[in-house]
Length: 374
Image 1 (cartoon, rainbow, N blue to C red):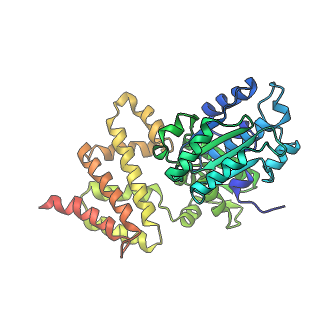
Image 2: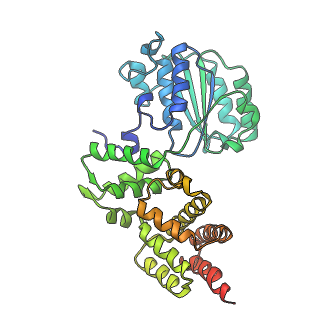
Image 3: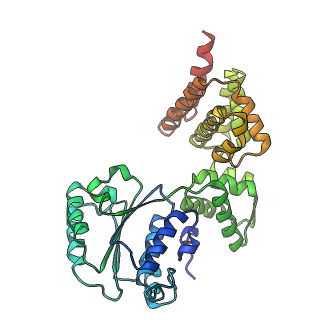
């Protein structure tokens, strides 16, 4: 059997397998059952949230004999049409990556090809990924096609940057906004894959992988694959931290404690210590930004709202971690937290190009602590 990376191996093949996009799935499946599918869709949202996956499932569903009766919306994944699309062999499913095929010539070629009827399927489906990358001339050519699409064609445009899309294109499509996955759903997805792969992995390790994926299924599955490449059948939190170059939340808490105590020397020693241990300082900066963001939001909550806000911004926190961040938050004003978040964002951006990766973090510490002494 072909050795596939995890996100390909476990890519959903039916609507029921898609996680956390129920608002989109419900609308699409209703349209399939009622026979009211549109000729142009626009899927927008962060990378790795399932836009292309849902586009392929939709391409199967509109062409599968089992859905044509109106009693089912799920592709059967058994007929010739479904199998051809699953295997990437269908001549009637045309996928274009606009990042590398962004010019007028490619769209003209598409417009010529669209005139011909499908080879085997009922519909020719055109999936244009990262469609916002098209040139202005290419957009104008695409617009003409979307204004008068042939009955046998369906367009599915996918983008991570909706703000770069011309309004004329948006207005001619049914728009669907894909959401990032919340942490518990992402952890459950990783747990399912680990079980299928017969890998034992700590809950805390799964949560760390999910946190680093920032709500993207594909990123989470890629990170899990990276961890599983050790061929260790029992994976611990410490191993995941080492592989991903991440720092445990306890290190972030320690760093914040140095800032609370106004201990600039201790903070700088700590930064250099974790740098020597091989941790990714860019990731550490991101973790600090995330922590101070949580602190800032929790600080705005009334006492009766704390649990609600915790579920919103820090569902992974234990009660002890929540108590700790609330206590630390009392030592900072809202102005302090805004300044800290901005300084660490700047530091994170500078780390990759800095002569010494720890220098941008050291500068933040000196600016916020040493300057207060003068």
